[in-house]
Length: 244
Image 1: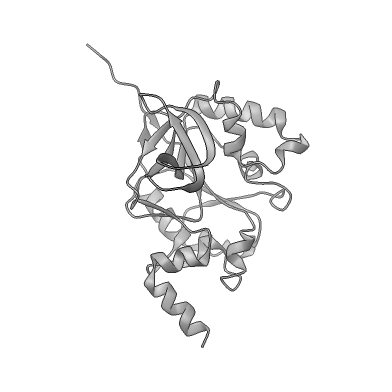
Image 2: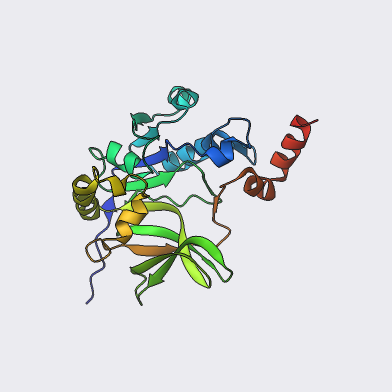
């Protein structure tokens, strides 16, 4: 008789919102990506509600650039703030480092994701990165998977591929291994410009993670205002009205 894998109760979630997002902010009138309204809801507020609905016990928002714009969220949600003081000098590995003391069985989220349906669960079986499929050319981070959907390779750009998109879950043993590597390499000059995913890519042999596959209409990310306009007709009308 086969025994299924043990699930782990999720301890917390961090949502990374510290980055400059300069390309987006230059087009949005200075509004950070996480605070734009998408289909009638503030993007970050929607994600926080989804985490609360999934009974995630702690939600931490990682702040840096324009941190003052996010302060109101504490008045309406039971969330905690962590400040990434290295946000201007580093890529998102700085946000992971800032949250290192609270990461255990943790969701790692980004403020600029829109989930059509709630993807979060209060218990998770193993570490994974959300992935969606495209049969077209993409500049996203494309995955090579084994027969059991474990990630065996990552390339930036490709076609006919599953690629990283959306949230991540780190099980406690994965968290411990990743943070050991990050703390060892954090002060290296070459680490500063790296996404945490790039650090992960360099250590696939010791950091076991699955791709969790989702349909393409489940997870959205808005790199530019044009991406948002294409997704939300109401936002397009708002911009048109604003420019009159």
